Length: 119
Image (cartoon, rainbow, N blue to C red; front, side, top):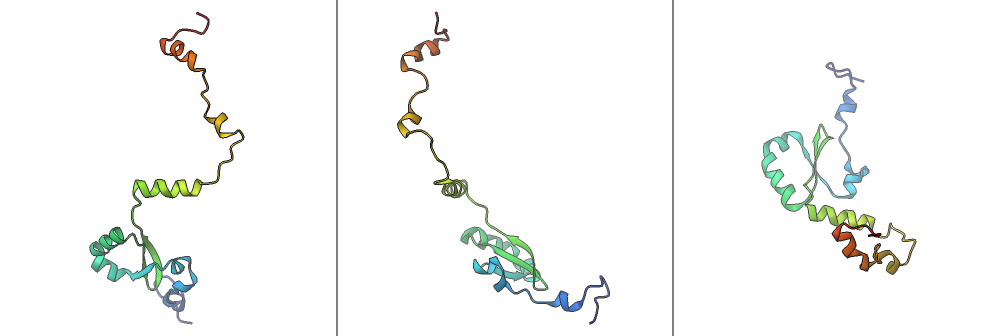
């Protein structure tokens, strides 16, 4: 086997084409672009990623080296978090008990005025 003189890696290993079909990214249909092409079209690709909310994998010699992802809006992030949490909480008391005021409504005036309960 021939060797890469700069760093001793096998040329065959360095030249192996990246096969996205075996990765999770391929199942999500994430596009791949060579680093040189990315460099030439970077600004336009940034616009596409932002506009279409798609991820992009940048490759060098067929191997992934970077992933360009769109920024998630606050609303989208909140919706994603709430969806992930949905159904994950178990209440140990009935809902009416959970929502019942902690303090008797007659005591609110006392609390607002800063008086003690024993005045």
